[in-house]
Length: 71
Image (tube, rainbow, N blue to C red):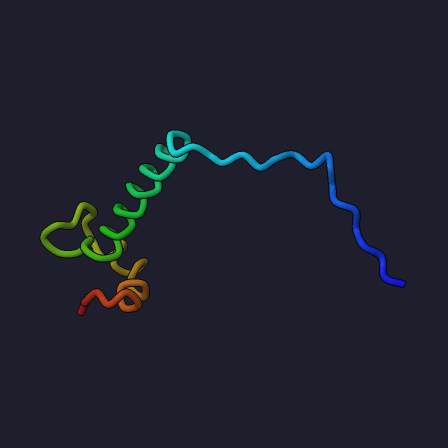
């Protein structure tokens, strides 16, 4: 004998999150992603903010994965 579940009558309604609440987090996420993209793609050579090869060695494989030339 199959049993069917009764519909939940006391379940809370799901309220949507407003754009005003999401916007600051979206801007922060975008800024962090741009900084990460800079370090993976351009932190080498004339535009380097950090001297030495340390950053290059840390992001070397990611650079190849994303198609940035580095050699």
